[in-house]
Amino acid sequence: MRRSARSVAPRLAAAGTNGARRLLSEGPPPRAVAPSLTPPAADPDDPLANPMARLLEQNKQWAAAMRSSPAMLKRMVQHKPKYLWIGCSDARVPANELLGEGAGEVFVHRNVANLVVSTDVNLMSVIQYAVTALKVSDIIVCGHYDCGGVRAAMRPTDHQPPLENWLRNIRDVVWLHRDTVMQIEDLEARYRKLVEVNTMQQSLNVFKTGAVQRARVASRMDPTSKHTLPRVHAVVYDPLEGELKPLSVDYKKLLKEQETVYQLYQLPEHARKQ
Ligand SMILES: [Zn+2]
Image 1 (tube, helix red, strand yellow):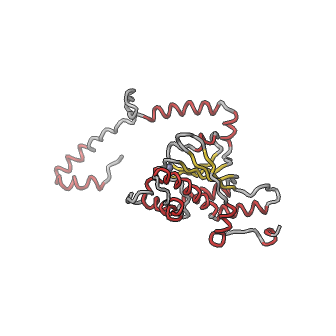
Image 2: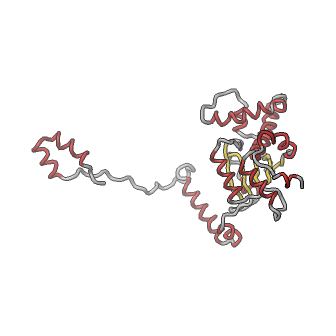
Image 3: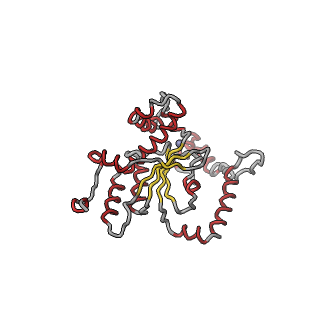
């Protein structure tokens, strides 16, 4: 990097006329030696010394397997996932592995406690893109037992912003469903119930979005579509058992109850009578 005139000027001024001549004849001061970009050799006994070496090696193996599989390669040519997954960021809840789907099949969004919040422009953009551009057929909202976010929201503690602001959404779910949740005395059973109720509530929130409502009305109007799409599903996962448990939610009844408040789009009059 060249020395700027601004950085040299103070040195010249401080050195006086003779000193300035000497400084100019000396040329630029020696440059600092740049640090080496080569990472230090990993200590095999210290797994934290250089985890990227192991991860990159594993990636090489995955890439080789991917390139040698025609089915996997086919899925990589075009981004055309069938499903949108909205799950918790918890490391024990990996979307593709749980569903038995390979890369390319699942469009994924994860956040703390799998919340669907209308002011979350990240998730709202994901839903919009998934529904309007990718045209996913199914949206899966997955909660899980032993969820740290749900547990935190059950405590009367300030977790500090922005996390506490986020957890407030779960506290609101507790309040909305207090007759179901708070009457359970056993704390562990209460946590588990809240995980289920929260997942159900978040899946209902998906139906409240304009993007999903527009797509569902359009598919009802489409004579070539056999189904009303996208469908929305609520499932709960137990990390200790590995199985996804579908929650029984009467969406038809719930959406009917809420339509005067949340319905943004509906079928035209003539289509509703059919
Ligand atoms: Zn979680």
